Figure 1 (cartoon, rainbow, N blue to C red):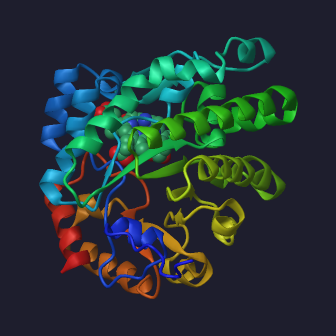
Figure 2 (figure 1 turned 135 degrees about the vertical axis):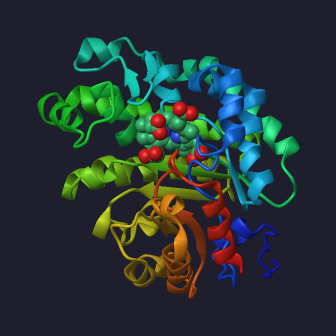
Figure 3 (figure 1 turned 30 degrees about the vertical axis):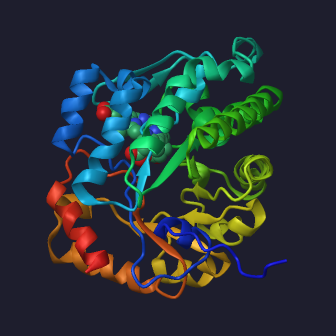
Amino acid sequence: MNAQPHRPEKTILRALAGEKQGVPPIWMMRQAGRYLPEYRATRAQAGDFLSLCYNSDLAAEVTLQPIRRYGFDAAILFADILLVPQALGADLWFVTGEGPRLSTITDQAGFDRLKPVEAIHDTLNPVYETVRILSRELPREPTLIGFAGAPWTVATYMIAGRGTRDQGPAHALMAENPAVFDALMARLTEGTIEYLSAQITAGAEVVKLFDSWAGSLKGAAFQRYALEPARAIIAALKSRHPGVPIIAFPREAGDNYIGFARATGADCVALDNSVSADWAAEKVQVDGCVQGNLAPHHMVTGGPDLVAETRRIVQAFSGGPHIFNLVHGITPAADPDNVARMIEAVRG
Ligand code: CP3
């Protein structure tokens, strides 16, 4: 046996393998988005957001735009976490200025109308094609990241039919009809495994699991509906695709961030900013790579605070493996020049 471990070349893969680097790699959630004029032009050409997601050539084009403009260390597949519900048979549309709308699932009959997991690829094939195009066309350095929503977060949208502040309808179904709720979670867990596995087969080098509403699960519910599905998805992917790193994002998990990587097998935990970088360096980064955690408003406000806050985060995580990122997506009001200033503050 050769004891020399394989050392990946790309900077994101090195961070995910646990390597501390002088300059952390950087990418940004929603880096392809409405703050960029070139994104708005391509989106207009596609017609609307969902048509853009399913147009493989244009989805690949918008994925590449922020790479060309800024030289990020990762490209994230352009798609949406709500394509999986649509592939399972839910109706999905976006209301301008408001957000997503879906048909709702409130009972057994609603659940029974969903398609089986095997059917998802019929809808999601264009996404895999986007990944194939990107793995051909990306420059050598940036790492291609695929993604999916975690079962709980996706379930909250499928149950309520829209984004909700407190995820009330999903919590209500969990309490009032646990059989339907658990069946939905199981279907989503299976579907997410198949979806991410197909993205990896198509060329995704890393995958990220977005559990944006994990913070509203407390105590045993967090273990059962955030941690356990992540563990099951990661275990299945690791057995099918050994060596492909996985980033988990149990947003606003608070103390539940501690030990999450160890318990789920994730190679990296993405952080929001309800936890401080100093706290997370001590409590979470001890287990491996962390990603985060600059507040996106700095991309709007800029100025000396942007630079100071960026440097503070880089410094706080400088003792271990770190991927610099925002805590959620960059907003349409962001100034593209502030993104360049952030990158300069990280690398300069
Ligand atoms: O990070 C990336 O750029 C990759 C692509 C990506 C999108 N959405 C594109 C998108 C990813 C990873 C997501 C994740 C996503 N989508 C989440 C989890 C992360 C988070 O943001 O909390 C959620 C909850 C969704 C569902 C969703 N999609 C909402 C609530 C909205 C509306 C909000 C908004 O900004 O309008 C979307 C739309 C969406 N998804 C946009 C983009 C670029 C804006 C679409 C547009 O061009 O109008």
